[in-house]
Length: 256
Image 1 (cartoon, rainbow, N blue to C red):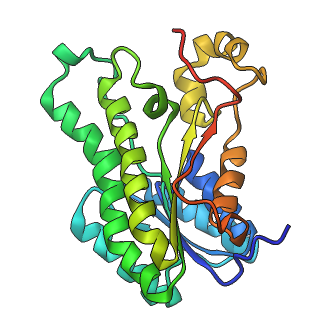
Image 2 (image 1 turned 45 degrees about the vertical axis):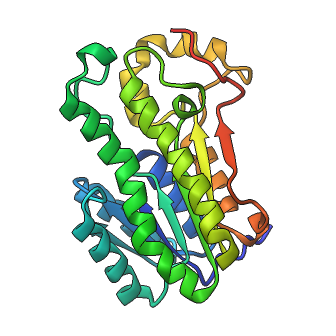
């Protein structure tokens, strides 16, 4: 299927590794020009861009902390300067940071603020400054990254992460209602356990147990998430707006 992305331009935040890298590669494979944004992983982002360029794609990297207004404005301006348009925004950036597992009563306020800033504030800022350009041209796609934690509620000791990811879903519903009449769709992906390098490293001791809880019997692959994002960014998803797409292999609850 031709997804019609040949003349489109996409920003992928957190695009230097993991899901973001897979999303950037999937969009580029369909012909889109890709801006790989990263806050700190500059070398990795440049490596992703080199791979895309070697494959004949159009791509650049931009260092930007998308929880900061000035960086988001610069990211959008750099994209427009490089490619003269902006069609697709993939809000993938968001780190969990240190000291992840904390019950609510022991959760430092700065960790709460950190999590919401990285996941929810960043998505809001990117929408705020990217969407006007999509509205002006009458076409756009926004794909935000939540999590299964945002769907079923944060499990114990992950309340700040679950709240941030649930907030991303609510933010996307508002964007879908406000921007849909102007030709811009907004949707959410909610991945479960996907086999990024980070996940396989941190959850190695329990991966076998996790796989037994997934109806498909395995951990997902980043490329499988990338393909869903490419679809949501395409003409094929022209009537998909305000949707939450679970990418979990059928596992909708957490047992450990």
